[in-house]
Amino acid sequence: MFAEAIVPLISLIALEVILGIDNIIFISILADKLPEENRNKLRVWGLGLAMLIRLALLAAVSWILKLDQVLFTVFNTAFSGKSLILIAGGLFLLYKSTKEILHKTENVTDDATNMRSKSGSFKKLLSEIVILDIVFSVDSIITAVGMVQELWIMYVAVIVAVIIMLFASKPISAFIQKHQSFKILALCFLMMIGLTLIAEGLHFTIPKGYIYFSMAFAFLVDIIQLKKMKSHN
Image (cartoon, rainbow, N blue to C red; front, side):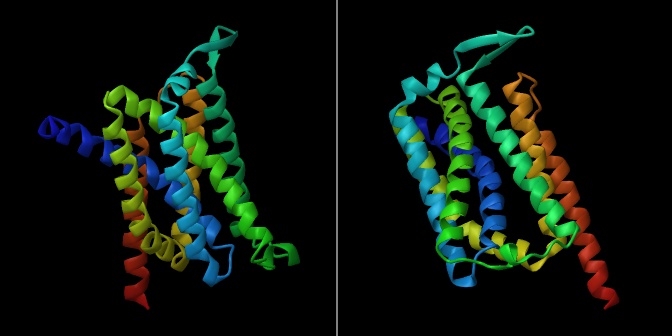
């Protein structure tokens, strides 16, 4: 029985890690707003809460599945609880990523932005992470239920995926903070994810493989450009 569960377990862990990349990038960008000593704390808390939220949602999986039921219809478009959560999360992600891009490209500097409060800012940023954790968790749980039937496989996949993300988050965060061009690329990636969430909420399916491939290609171009700049220096 355990041998039969290996393939779906590995598949689900891989899916959770891929979906978790969005979380890691979002947390890494927000962590850059904090003092150095608090950044790792935000990453651990953010990913730890993501795991707890997903485990809690798995415990209420029957309620989660009801989110797929149609609540109302507007212009022949059916809206369910899941649709509303995805649209709200997509809009929030678009707002945050657009705001950060404008901040980086326009070189906005004000006292409020430059003051990195260790208490207020941490709580505010953590609350923003929790909002996105809930959105991504609902999406991943419904996807997981469609892949496997055994609850224990889902629990193990979530825990293992979060452990992998905890180890991966620090080097990814350090890389993004070191190279500002990649930070803009990461923000554009979050904008695309936001648009994808809105489209999914409106029942327009955009294969995530296309998005990840296009961003991987853009990342490769940025790597080549970075190497070229280093060789000229």
